[in-house]
Image (cartoon, rainbow, N blue to C red; front, side):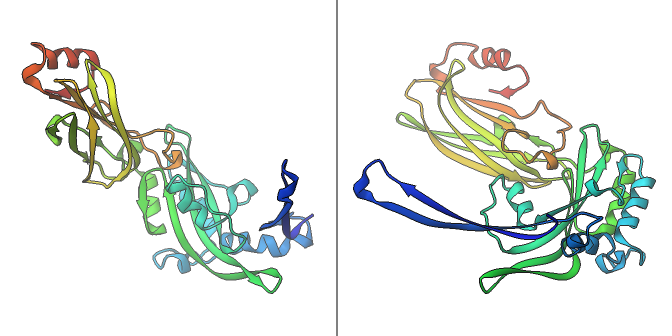
Length: 321
């Protein structure tokens, strides 16, 4: 039914060994709301979405006109060649705990709590060639404990975040200029790996590896997956995987000690900008996708003649010596 609801759960655990008895656990409550635009009972829930939809745009950003935020966003989308937003449609608005956004960015499951700040999210369709979705998070309320129950408290609408692929926008007034640009001109990461940035020190049956992954682009590469592998003749012997956010026009360093008992071999560093760990909504294509793999030969004096050239032919789009 429309309105505010609280669900409380108790788990009762029994065991095959009857001497262990029965254990009862109180689980976290679940607080949620249902609203129907035609039902008066849903008004208190709907009011948190209306607070964002009808918020004075100038109060969200002093450079914007004093009009309803939903209408302003619609006018911006209509003026852009690659965006669409219809504030009258219910699917244009979502309600979430504000902390959910940070959990998605970090590829984590948000720790469940029935209390927290509430955000209304304006969902903006972006025709960027990748069926993109932009999201504008507006803080509109908070759920707090009140005795044995929970209270829903409205707060003045304020901008929480703007998610538009890999662009890092901090103000709404910067949105029209970005949407007016052709998609290839949008901020994007450009991560690369070169063999000169792989440093190897041999010590017995181990190699100590330090590698620098660089991003020459205009946006951060979030949760890039970096594989560091010790192999011989292309056959993996040991590896380590890192997840790193590489800042725009910056770099990250990864270091690891890997087992390599053979007299010669290679250290391979492979950087993947998109993987199972990537928040797809924040991903943008790398303009130079073939420069994320590099290697360095270890024990060159023991390797067969032309060993590095052989590896180059095997790996295709990579660099190494």
